[in-house]
Length: 226
Image (cartoon, rainbow, N blue to C red; front, side):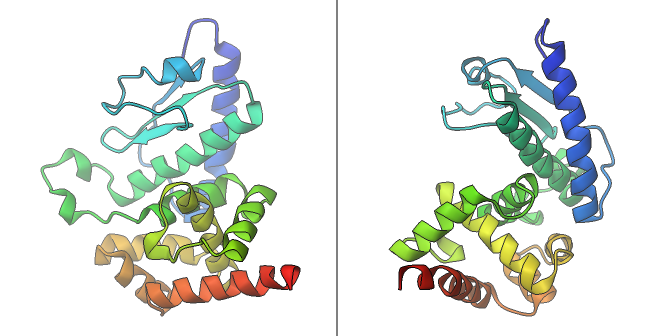
């Protein structure tokens, strides 16, 4: 962190410790190594980071890169948003450690690794950092399902991968139990594909899960516009 930003760093450290307590309980997993955290004092400076090689757009709130499992996050003026992004990115760091450990530093190809789809990875990060369901997610889900633009799971991309994924994780948690989330991860680590992981952990196909989730959204929101 920048010289003079001790207060920001202290806030981040305390926030991450609290978040880690929640995440390790949800996933029933303890980190096997420390996670480096690089803080930037503004988004403009964050966009110039060389921690990753990609150019960072203005809309990106933080990045966790898998190879060295480092979190890179800017402060944008809101401590609540800072808290949320710290927790969100830490979920990715714990996942990388759980799924890959030191594997990414070996010569194994990417095909040998389980790569959860965006809706599951970002959906869980939102589900955990927002403490389940929240008003913002409710607003997006209501609009998307009543206006007919909420895609099935296989087509969830972009921003909807975050909110649609959060909605799906909430549905899985409510119907099957929150303990199924780490089970899906561990099944994926063994089976290598999301389809097999879902089938093994939940007993349904991704297509059935997608259909059931959307039916549940319609059950909740359609009566409001009847």
